[in-house]
Each structure stands twice: as structure tokens, then as C-alpha cells.
Length: 85
Length: 151
Image 1 (cartoon, helix red, strand yellow):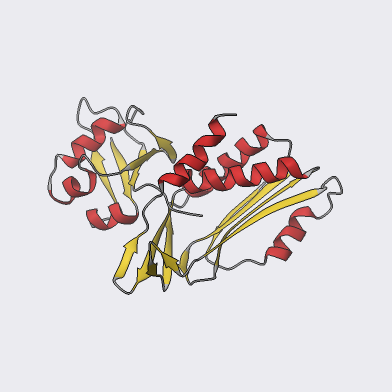
Image 2: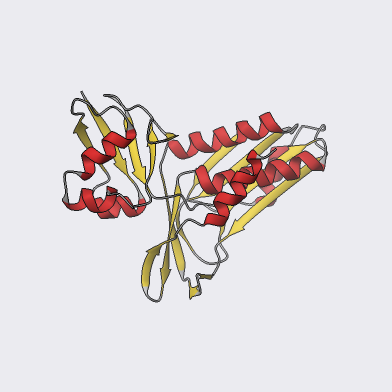
């Protein structure tokens, strides 16, 4: 089982994709771990998701925190701080 | 409760009239309309593109309205937010809150806007003479939303 990952706004541009399916490796079970796993792939992922970047995350369309659990079948989105209104 | 995300413009008068129709218990309507400014961070802005996260946006807005109804004695709230290409003076957002009296309606309207600004997944990319750029989130918006935690 894998999880669907979506990217929006500047992160979508940095990644060069709108979404991808990723296999969850053993031991990755929360937002912080998932972000670190993705950033460790290097390249665009490291640029978009590396430490020091202001990144917000949602899990199944609810705003999430670093310790929010992530499991197979979830929809996780990474995006910059929001600027609507 | 009504929450809409749309590309089309909206008619404030028609929207508010329809929202109040057939409810004679409403004694107050507080509304906020956000427009596209022609300047930001000191640079002229020719237009902007509003991106959002379909599905989560509607869910987030509905959750904010639910929270406003939990906190204040209001009748209902309407939120319309546009996405896509917008020009200066275009309407971006309408928040209208109905209630028996003005106090709760004013407060809930401001609360909904403050939370929308910091929690609803919209992103603005503006066009300037130097090219297109993503609008940066403002710390003042975070502070505006946080003050509602004090009460």
C-alpha cells in the first residue's frame, strides 16, 4: 500500500509535479518522518521540502502537525503557508 | 450554511438577499468583501492567480463556519471565495453572517475572515513588472487569528 502525495503553489512548482504515489518505508509513520523521507531523495524534493522551508501539511484534507500519524492509503499534501482572502 | 469556491464573480446584493430570504428572525447582516489591490510590497500588481486545494478548501471553510456558529449566537454564515485569474478591483471573497443582533454577526464575520486567511488552502500568485511571484504569508494574519484564542 502506498500514499498519495499532493503539492500546491510554490511547492508544486519546485517539485515539478502536482502529485505522486509513494511507498511508505518501515518506520515512517508521521508527517515529520514522511517529509524527511521525501527530502532525503535529493534533487527537487530536497529543495522543496528541506529544513528551513516554510511548509504546511495536511493529512486527509485536515491541517496536520509534525506528529500527525500517516499511514498507507492516506492523502497527504505539502504546501506553503496559505494566502487567501 | 453555504460555502462556495468558484471562478465566476458574484453579486453581493443578490447573494445577501437570497441568504436572508424567508427568515424574519434575522435582524442583522454583517458582511466583508475582499478586493484585489493594485499594489503589494511596494510593487504595482497587474493581476493575480488564485490556486486552491479542491476538496480541502470546502472542508476547511465549512469547519470555520461551524466553529463560528459554536462560538456565537448567529443564524448562519455564507462564504464565497473565487479562484483563477483576477484583476485589480475584482472581488475575491464574500463573508456574510446573519443574526438576531449585530454584535455576534460582526464578531463572527471577523473571526471567519481571520481563520480563512490562515487556515483555508488558497495561494495567490501576483503578476508584477518584475514577473510573477507567490504572495508571502503575513505574520500579522497569524496574529489576527491567534487573538481569538484568548477569549
